[in-house]
Structure formats: structure tokens, C-alpha cells
Amino acid sequence: MTQHQLPKGFLWGGAVAAHQVEGGWNQGGKGISIADVLTGGAHGVDRVITDNIQQDSYYPNHQAVEFYSHYKQDIALFAEMGFKCFRTSIAWTRIFPNGDEATPNEAGLQFYDDLFDELLKYNIEPVITLSHFEMPWHLVKEYGGWKNRQVVDFFVKYSEVVMRRYQHKVKYWMTFNEINNQRDYKVPLFGYCCSGVIFNQEPNPEECMYQVLHHQFVASAQVVKLGHAINPAFKIGCMIATIPLYPFSCNPDDVMYAQEAMHHRFLFSDVQVRGYYPAYALLEWQRKGFHIDMQPQDAEILREGCVDYIGLSYYMSNAVSAHTKGNTDAITGFEGNVVNPYVKASDWGWQIDPVGLRYSLNILYERYQKPLFIVENGFGAIDKIGTDGKINDDYRIEYLKTHIEQMKKAVTYDGVELMGYTPWGCLDCVSFTTGQYDKRYGFIYVDKHDDGTGTMERSKKVSFDWYRQVIASNGEIL
Ligand code: BGP
Image (cartoon, rainbow, N blue to C red; front, side, top):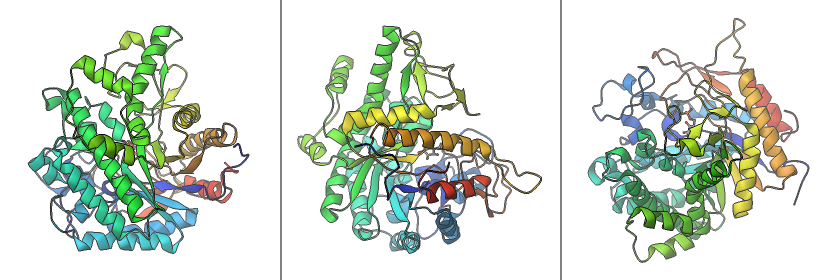
């Protein structure tokens, strides 16, 4: 079905994750999470994993942007922009501080009750990720993270507790954020945050990554089935980092390599959407001699836990060449990548490609015929306050405008079924890959800087009013 405008009820909003905004890392009985032991940001160093807890300033996520104490003020600003939905995650460690307790932490549960009530007061739908890069640190140290099958049960229990508790407040859920980041298992941060495992330190990093992944697929499927039993109206999705890999040239070797490389990105949604492993993955494991431990009931669990929709992040496209197959790109850490001469890149080397968004939406919709939901998209930049006191982020407006244009084409011209659009970091927050405050995405500026200074005061950037108008016109005025 094609339509000429975005559908009524399109879910415009914004997205963040608990550990990147909340702060209050040890308040309300919260336990230590993976994100709480990551340094970076304030000290200008790369993100390093250490449990040698020093002063808080070494750990940007400890304070983040104090959403834990400022959420009412922030939600009022989201409402002013006209948000229909707001995507955030639940911090597992607020609910089960260590991950393996018998009973949940009531103060943590109450915090999200209050947060969701505040959103619903303004008719803003919460869109909730159950695991966004922050499993309990205790489960990493004592159990070895997602390598250990027991973690499946801990995650299912945590998910059941929150889905029961918030069944009348939250309708839209996602299981694991950017689960396919783990394919880039050579980048320690990705493996660590997604699974509590540093794959490079394992005897066979790639095989270990697939074992971890199998546990997460089983956990995700169990949660989807359970969620539908708790409330059949729930919409539960997967969440995939979508980076289309273009062949560098029309040389058939480049085209074939791009397709192989895309298999590595599609595997994740193939299993979560269809409920079984695709042949190309099983054959690859066979060729490489990998043995993945599976239990007899797993095939049925996967089949019964197919997701309702595909949540996706989109920031960039990449290009791959058969000549560089096997090489790891110094900037992105991705394999076989080459610079695409037809697109520009951000200061962090992320290639800016709005058309790639339309292309990706089409690819995913053709492959699965399931509703899609763009739950992250955005432009990280260092924003400056002008002499007039304004933050004129016209480069961000340009990025979002061109991406929304392509998104609209995918819906109104190509007929893709799209549920909504939530730009990343609608409120400035701690950057995931760098741990910086000064790599910003927001419509709302937060006065907090990498040198540790700042009042946490919120102010509107020029993009704030622009986005308000976009939402009010349902994407007609850009
Ligand atoms: C995605 C993550 C987010 C977010 C975003 C921007 O990969 O899901 O958590 O941070 O990327 O990345 P960064 O903050 O590193 O610029």
C-alpha cells in the first residue's frame, strides 16, 4: 500500500538509554553495571574497562546528565516539542542490582513507575529497551557474562518482572539494543557492552561471539513469548544497527563480498524475525569447525519467540572492497571497509548518507515484510554557544531533514511500513563510543563538559523549534 503522507499516529519522538542519561549510579539501591566501570570522557582518554572505582569524574556514566533527578523537567521539554513517544531503557541494575537476586529492588521499580507516569501524563508512549549496553557487573565478574547459559534465566526473570509491573503503562518493547554490534567482535567496547565478554581475550573469539549470541537469541525469544502471554497487545521488537555495506565497485568480486558481509549483519534479524538460523550461518560454522552449545528445546524456543517489528538505528553507510577483505578499518573497526568517495563523513568518520536510509528500509522490508521502527538516527557534533547566546545547530537540522526526506520516500513512494522515528540523544547525553559529553546529538543542550565543568542546566538549541514544527506537521514542514 502506498500513501502520500506519513500515517496518522506515526510515532515521532526521541531516544536515549538509561546509562547515558540517568546518572544516580548508586542511588535508590542501584547496583554497578558494565557502564559504571567504563572510564572516558572527562579525562579525554579512550574508554577503558576497570573496576578500580576511583573518583566519579573518571566515569562519565556515574553522573551522566542527571536525568534520574531532572526527568520531570526534561519530559516537559519533550512534550513541548510534541513527542508522541520517548525511547529509553531500563537499567537492569536498578531492578536486580547484582542480577542474580531472588527478589527485585522496589525503589528501582518505583523510579520507572514514576518516569512512565510522567510520560503518560503528556500522552507520550514509552518505548522501552530491556538491555542497552549495561548488564550487571556482578554477572560479568562472577558468571562470565553472556558466555554463561545461566545468564539467560537471570535476564528472562528481570524482563518478566518489568513486563508484568509495567504491562498497563508500556506497550512497545525491544529486547537487546544493537545486538549485531557483536559481529564487530574485534572492537573490545562492542563485545564488552553487549555481552560482558572481551572476545579478543577468548581462545576462539569468533566462536565465542556466536555462543554468546545464541544465549541472547534464546533469551530474547523467551522474553517475546512471555511478553505476549502477559499482554497480547505488547509489540516487542529486536534492535539492529543498520549499516548498509555497498560494493566499492561493480566488479563482481566486490558485489559478492558485499553480500557476504551483509550476511554477517542480517544474521541477527534473520534469527529474531524468522525464528531459525539461516543456512549461510550454519554452513559457515561448519566450514570453520565451530561448535555452538545448544539445548534440544532451543530450536522451538527460537521459533516461538519471533519479534513483532524491527527496531533499527541508522547513522551511516559503509563500502567494502574484495581487495581489503580481512583488513580491519582503523577508524570504524569494521572489516573490509573502504572510504566511499561519494559521501562526506562526520568528525568521527561516520559516513553521512541519507539515501542509505531509504535503501536500508527497503532492504529490510523486502526481506521480512514486518513493520520497521527507526529508533536511532542523528548527528554527533561539538555544539558552540554563539555570541547571541543561541546554539545554532543548523548542521544537525540538515542531517535530520535529509534523512527524514528519505524516510518519507521509503514510506510514501516505496510502501515501507514504518511505525515511527526517534532521533538519538534528543537530550544531550554521554556518547557511547567515546564517553564524551561534547559529542552531542540533542535538541536540548546540557551544560556539562569533558573537562568536568558545567551546571547541568538545560537549554533549547535552534533544532528544538525546528523539530517541534516537523512533528506538528507530521513531517510535511522540514
Ligand atoms: C548507538 C548506540 C547509542 C548511541 C549511538 C551514538 O550505537 O545504540 O547508545 O550512543 O550509537 O553513538 P555515540 O554516542 O558513540 O556517538
